[in-house]
Amino acid sequence: MSVSVKNLTHVYAQGSVFEYTAVKDVSLEVGAHEFIGIIGHTGSGKSTFIQHLNRLLVPTSGTVVINGIDINQKGVLMKDIVKRVGIVFQYPEYQLFEETVYKDVAFGPKNIGFDDEKIDFYVRESIELVGLDFDKVKEVSPFDLSGGQKRRVAIAGVLAMKPQILILDEPTSGLDPMGRYEILECIKNMNKQKGICIFLVSHSMDDVAQYADRIMVFNEGKLVMFDEPSKVFADSGKIKEMGLDVPQGKQVLEALKSRGVNVDTSAYTTEDTIKELLKFFKKNGGNNV
Image (cartoon, rainbow, N blue to C red; front, side, top):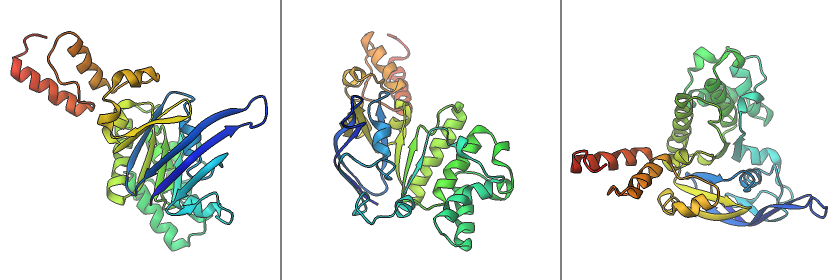
């Protein structure tokens, strides 16, 4: 499922005194099965951009083409877009409303017209894909679950509609470290095992560095960078000028380097940072730090 965006611009309140251009002339190509991270300061255009990918917003100008179909073209039905592109907003557990987990996850596929046999299969598959035991949770009220479990149920509800593209807006907000890790691993598994194309919006540089194949960087409505994590985070100064941080491991290495410690600052994931520090200590025996 490919995504092609060309010259996308979105202007709010066009023609009024409140006119504001939130996204400015954005173009990009994303292939099937990619894991894309999206970062940018508050108000940079991230949220406005992702809402164009399933026609929650219509461009002021430009096109959004999903698998060869211009989704804003006359005659394209919204239910057909929803089948292709699922979106999970921040704190999705607040959108849970049914009396059981099964009914909540089944709501979406039922609403777009899947038959009962497919609904039953997709609900079970989606619940298990997000790491929950179907038989244990299917009759449980979603409101009796933990915060992390509620979020998984909300994601399962979108997955049950069988999207080929999944957009997640800050899916780990408010979760403890273990809950955050479990959700991100779950998302990674969807990408690797099911081939779902992922767009992950996050304020955590560590998360996008760890999981994304490529990272989109928004600044003042423009897509200013779109590249592999190693290249995006190579220039810390440029990232910081946009009001963003670099991953914590890279911050540690750069701080050591500034104090005269001979470490390689190119590492950007926690795992690679640890490897670099262990290599340094092995070479130097803990001296010169």
